[in-house]
Length: 149
Image (cartoon, rainbow, N blue to C red; front, side, top):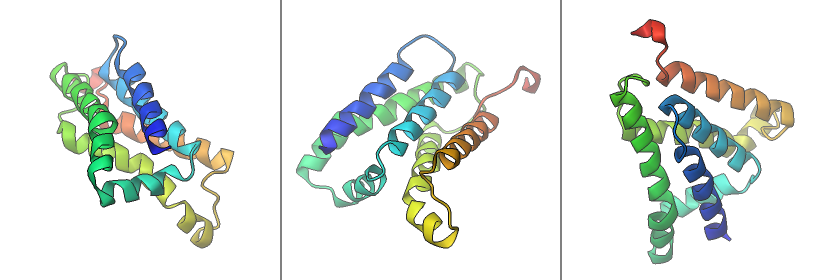
């Protein structure tokens, strides 16, 4: 089951990265796809967290086959965007990790949000508001405007 989901997300990421286009749009497309993917699979974030912490041969195979190529694809897009002057000067690896954390943490925090903040993280309005906030944050943090040059 885990492999099916990892493969599905890797396929979505490849679709975001493949067509010609600017790095900012690709990064935002990736973040949007990652958010939508996790919002439709409430158990995935905690399962993935355990997956990354557990290790083991079969899990290492899945990481090598799906997770690492996706992560490397995002890094390549970020680094190309920096070289082309489309994105601010950032470290591709650190930025890829930060983007994943920005999306994943919200879903991992869903039980806390429900009990402490009395907020249903999976409510449509809350999902929409969070996604727009994340995309706006990423856009402002990474994508250079012409006036910045």
